[in-house]
Amino acid sequence: MTWLRVALALLVSMGLPITAAAHEVQPAVADVTVDEARVEIELRVAVEPLIAGVNLSEVEDTNDSPLSDENDALRALPPEELSAALTEAWPSIAEGITLRAGETDLVPELTAVEVPEVGDVEVRRDSTLTLAADLPQGDEPVVMGFDAELGTLIIRQIAEGEAYEALLTAGALSDPMPRTGVATPELGEVIQRYVVSGFIHVIPDGLDHILFVLGLFFYALAWRPLIWQVTSFTVAHMLTLALATTGVITIPGDWMWLVETIIAASIAWIAIENIFGRGERQNIGWGRVGVVFLFGLVHGLGFASVLSEFGLGQYLAASLLAFMVGLEIGHFTVIAAAFLLFGLPLGTSPIYRKAVVIPGSLVIAAIGVYWVLNRTGFAGDLPYLT
Image (cartoon, rainbow, N blue to C red; front, side, top):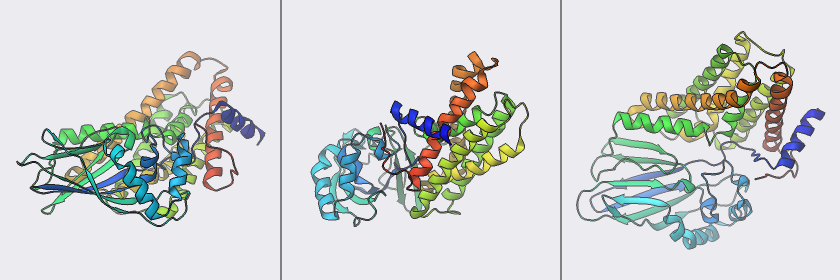
């Protein structure tokens, strides 16, 4: 497979951002309790990148950060030392947490830290932090959020048998959480939030999505096969997420390496099929659509590990549909950009396949193969590059 080695060497020499796991950076989960005088938050999060100062809005895997060495060193610390490092860094971390009652800004106090023992340092470990703040007199509701640099936040409020849950991305804030009962967002707000979240799941957070969809684009310029492929991928992805959200399926953490390996292999497979296929396709190709659907199910598992512990509140169906719409918009945004860059100027040229499809698919296949090697431990000492 000389061409793969050549393509991979070119990627490494160019310094392209290559990561092994598309979903290594996972959301933090905050369980919020609000009463008349106090707000308490149980926050489950990997604290090592927060202490190291990794900008989680810019990377999908902490190995892609220039601060990865500091993050890895923190992963190796025993619980008491990591807890001490967190306590020291907490004032700067807290600046990135928005906590407010009405117009009053609150400073979350770190009241307890529970850090697991050191395990496999290559795998993230989630610590449990207890935060608290006194509320001003009155009945103003509480809002909470993370700055984008701290990553995505799942927030949950449960009271009096009711539940409010939200997935907050790109620095978004929660709905107002009252001191009695739970937040009750409007349906329109929920739809807007999850359309945006679905889009962000692709652009900029989903390099695996982007590469896979580009692989579909290079299969054919004809719109019918392209639309069928992209839509089947989106529907399959959402089917897995829906099953995870409703608790029908769960993915143990120690199986995620296999899911990520299959995701990487799917990217390589689609690209290699483009290279050794029969050129431009005008027909749908139902076999290809079926393969794409199966791969879409696996891609959904990469995010299902998050949603398996997170419902979407009282608007479950609407939230899932809105998220799917956001995914589809993201996928077709990638397609539109590829068409403007490659299809429009060169699509009718006799050299399109040799000049665009094969080189582009080579690059995608090389990245997919590299990811497979990293996930299975066969990549040796090849570095993660930024």
